[in-house]
Image (cartoon, rainbow over all chains, first blue to last red):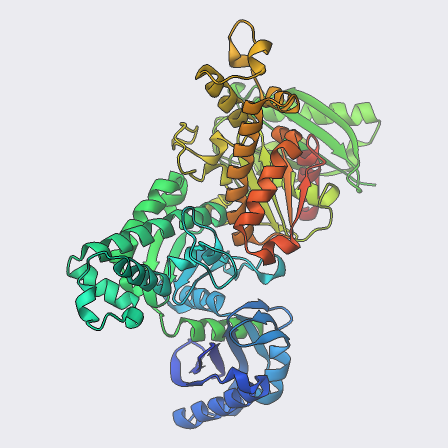
Length: 319
Length: 319
């Protein structure tokens, strides 16, 4: 039995998982990233987390054959270089080489959303499907395409930034510097923002009563889902609009990439049918029937662990 | 010296070319397809055209090592099967096997637009570029992506039907059965249709004088280009609208596929800057700067011969 470590390096936390040959997750640990302390601090911390995992599970670290890590941003997975990751402060950082010096086994890196989508094809909702397009709806919206079992990168390893297509009639400033990007609407952040703004502009909602002081900063997409279930008109309208806008954008992705399956992950995927129903309707209305007929749509089943499983499988496929 | 034949099998005509190892086009012949007479008739005719090419060029047919052919529709290029080509009346036809029995060398087939885009990367405007997205603007609008030097297919070999994304506010019936598809606007046919409809609805244009009988059925995209050059307001408006709508759709393709170069082929590409200027502006306004900064945009240089060169190179790469 050999082992692989899968890692999700986020702007806030690092999660490390220990996986066996069947990608069973034998153990998982989480620590704050503390990227501001420098990449060496992050890499040393990861090495300590790996020690902890082997100690806690009673497994033998000498059987570790590779480490896979997903990070946000643009990643040259062939050279193992993080080209740019804004929320880690990394630019042209040789992560595979540098982290490899700490962990003493080969390290393979890729974009975290690609790793997540790949994970869903390995052991999740779309296991074994050859052509899968996946998105994650969290703070932002990102996507990855697995084509014929392999991740699609495009020039500059930049493919799939569906969150940054422009939506007609929208002008909310986006973190990327543009305005009206899809992720300002179709993301956990975007759903919450729409609710806060529309309530502030005077629209009625049951959500108002949940924030009696009038400070809506704590309002999240989960509140919008809850209000939706109470029949709240504003919440229903926001979910319908978000799902429709998302579905129209996905129609482009489906037409261009021609996946056989679509998988939706990330925190806002927990909105489930509230969001998926209008999304499905918009997809069907906006794609040629040949695409729709062969498409299956799935809520991701590896919301928390998809990145770890994908990273581990990616590393094992390359070692 | 070995030779390869490149073929473009269209609904109206078949064009065969004889190419050497450097993809120089040594000779070219054209004949009506006559698809209604059956696929055997078409394949026998192609074999005769190949004989004619070798006779006319004085080359030795025994040095022919492969035939590549592009056809419209959905093509399983791995098995050499035409899954569906409406204007040839072919469905699940084993073209590679059947044509191979006539020509006595290995036959490789693919979608005609993919062959064209591949041709542009082999010996055209984007020679040697690794990541190229290409479209052809003719009767319709189709596209192909060359990713890391290889054609992208997606599930069901259906990737890239950009002509059939829906455009908000448009409702012209499309040949695919939907309404308001991009190709009802952004194609040679779509440009001409817009002009005919708007003149019929009473808009003023210099083009009216070119059809004194009032029968606008002969009005083509070339007339719109000519009117544009005379400062005709309607023609300018049509080119601006078409370029803008096309650019917005291309923004999706660029964001999802992340090409380093975009190439525009097909008859309507001859509109050149009249169309490309508003298209470029719409792309730049609708994509993240990281995509725009690395993107070069090219008018195809192999308008007539790209498909032959691409087909020949495709066959040579597989033989």
